[in-house]
Length: 155
Image 1 (cartoon, helix red, strand yellow):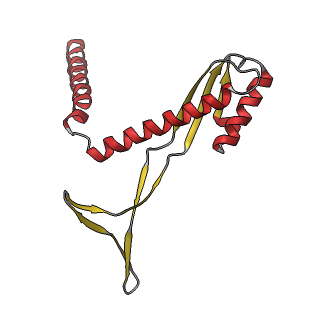
Image 2 (cartoon, rainbow, N blue to C red):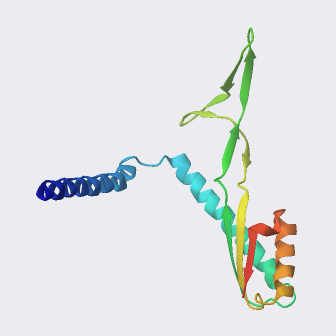
Image 3 (cartoon, helix red, strand yellow):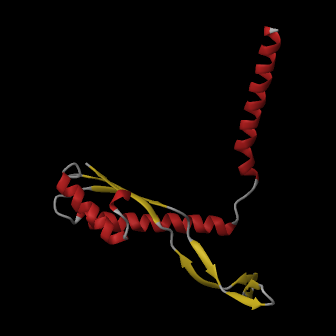
C-alpha cells in the first residue's frame, strides 16, 4: 500500500512539474500585438518622465540632496476612438468610425487617457528627517493630485 501511495505522489509531482513548464512556455507562443507593445513602451516612457520631473522638484526642496524616485502606474495608456451611435427601437448600436489609410483601415483616434499613479517611492538624502518627509510628501501630493498614503519617503 505504501509503494502505491509513493507511486501516485511521484506521478502527481511529475504532472505538476510538466504543467508548470507548459504554463511558463504558453505565453511565449502568442506574440504580443504591435499596438500593445507600443502602449507598453508609451506607458514606460510616461512613468520615466514623471520620475524625472518629480526628482527635479524634490531635489530643489530645502533639506533634500540626491534623490531616487519610482512611480508605479495603475494601468497602461488607453486610447479612445471616435464612435457613431445608431438608435433603434429600445437599443443603441455603437460602431467605431473607420478611415482608410495606405496601410489598411484604422479607427479614428479621439484622445488618450494617461494611467493613474498608484504610488510613489522616494529615497533621498535627508529623507529620514520627519520635516523633509512631510515636505516631499506635500510636493508630490500637489504635483500629482494623489493622497499622501500613496507616497513613501525614506532616507
